[in-house]
Image 1 (spheres, rainbow, N blue to C red):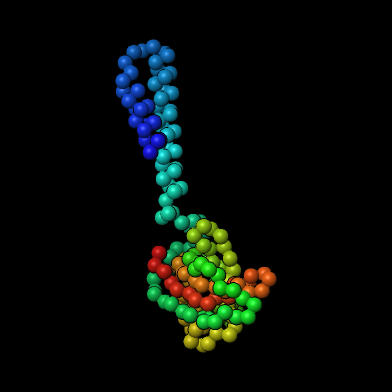
Image 2 (cartoon, helix red, strand yellow; image 1 turned 90 degrees about the vertical axis):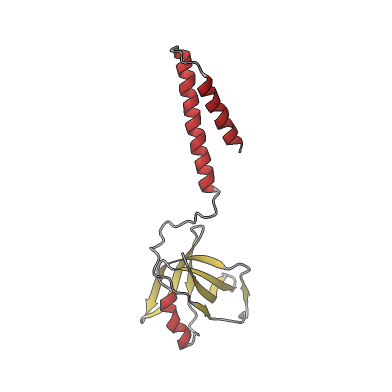
Length: 164
């Protein structure tokens, strides 16, 4: 708000200047024009940086066709593990497969932080059958994980596709 007031004051000063040809007046007008341009750029940058709609999408593959899929992989907290208090929303960057089954994937959250998630080998065949439809590079997902051991190894509990 303060920037808009300064911008309007500078604009008023520019308009109120007489049309004289003195060098001093011309320099003052040029200085005011430069200040107006800088304030406009600052206002635009502030609005972009403070917007919650802007997610960090650098390096994220294009979105695949959306399919609503929700998959619960684990319902109980394993021994030596704790459930993370927040759900993680992010984008699948890449998926690594062994023997045509997804083994692990890299997820980039909305702030640009990437993390690797290993898939537990104790999944049922029905659960495994849904993974290729969820783990598509570029897909936006919401996941719930539990962190295990002293290294905080993430174990996937729930994954859901989200429309981009």
